[in-house]
Image 1 (cartoon, helix red, strand yellow):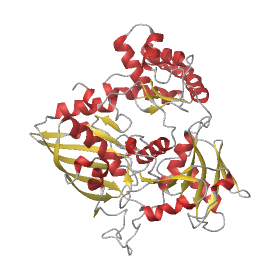
Image 2 (cartoon, helix red, strand yellow):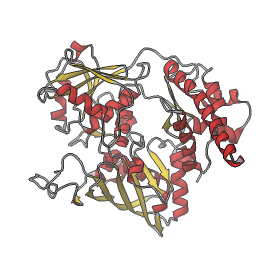
Image 3 (tube, one colour):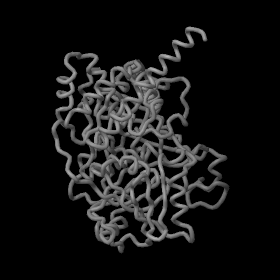
Image 4 (cartoon, one colour):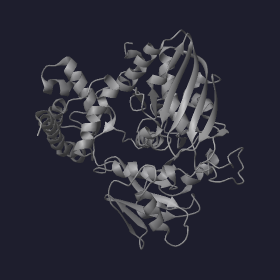
Length: 485
C-alpha cells in the first residue's frame, strides 16, 4: 500500500474516531440539559460521525476555515460538565472566538455562556396542534418530533384533518414517513387505528377528525393552552381563524400563510418581539417574505435602500395543475411541470407589514418553474449610496456568521451550487455571493430559499416564541450595527 494512501486513510479514520466520541456528548447535552449544539446554525443532534465531519467542513463556506474537530471536542467535553439551562449553543462561534481570544477554556466558556449558566429547567413546555397535514404540516411535524427531546420545549400533541375514507390514518402516516423531496423520516413510525394515534420516535400524536375548527374539545385529549398552527390556508383573516379560539383548550392561533386585514404578519428575527399578549391570532407571512425581509433589513441598515423590485423564481406548488385544466387563478391552470408561469406575489408589499419603513418601496412579481422545491428571489435595488460588490458580500457574510440574523440568513460562494443543494436548509434565505452585482447605486442580490423546509423552520421559531420555549442562542449575537464593517 502506498505511503500517501496509508497516511490519508489514517488521518480520515482519526477524524472519524474523534467525531464518534462527540456523539454521546451531544446526546447527553440534549437529553439532560435540553441544550442543542450546532456549528454555524447546523444542528448536530442525531448526526452520524460522517455528518459531524461535514458540519465542521461547512464552516469553510462561512469564514474560509474548516473547523478542526480537535478544537470543538474539548469545548463539548467542558460543556457536558457545566450546569446549563435550555440553550442553543453554536460550537462554531465558540471555537472561533476562543481561537481569537485564547486563555483558560473554563473561564472563557463561563463568560460566553453566562446567560444560560446555572439556570434551572422546569417541567414546562407548550402543546402544539397542527390543523391540516399537507406539505407544510408534515414538515412542521418532522421538525417538532425531531426537537421533542425531554419534552421541555414544544410538544406535538395532535393533528386535525378531515377523514378521507378507509385507510386514512395509515396513508397520512405513510406521507409523514416518506417524502419525495425531503427523503425518508429519520426514525420509526407506527399507527394505532383503534385510538387514532401516530407514534413517531416516542412522540404520541392524536389524530382528530373534524370538519369544524370551532367544536373540538382538545382538553378531552389532555391538551390545554395549545398553539394551533393552521396550515390549511382555508382561512386567512381574523374572522375565519377565530373559529379555532372557540374550541376548548386553544390559547393562540398561527397561520402559515400571509394574513389578511389587520392580522399581524410576523417574520422571526425581524418583528417577532412585537407580538403582545393581545395577539391571539397571528400570521407567519409567506416563504418569500421570510426569505427576503431579513436580507433587505440587513442591507437597509448598512447602506440604505431607496426602492427596488423583487422577482421570485418559485417552485410550483400544490395549488397548480399537473396538466392543463380549469383554475380560478390567471395562468395557474396550465401544466405546472411543463411551463414557466408568470404570476403575482404579495411578498414585496408584505415586507412592509414586518418592516414598516419599506412601505411603498418595493414592487414584485413571480415566475413559477417546474421544480418541486427551493426557490430564488432576485432583489434589484436602488441604494441610498454607491456600493461595491466586495463590500456588500463581506458584510452579508458577516451577517450570516455573527449577527442577530444568523438563524435567518446564510451565505454561500460557490460556482457549482444549484437549487437542489439547498433542500432542507433551516435558514430563511441564503445569499449567493457570486451572483451579486453592484454598479454605483444599483445592487442586485440573489437569495435562495427552501420554500418548504426553510419556511417551516421559521414557523417553528415563532411557535417557540409564542410558547415561551425558544432557546437562547449563545454565544451572544451582535446587532447589525455592531459588525464593524
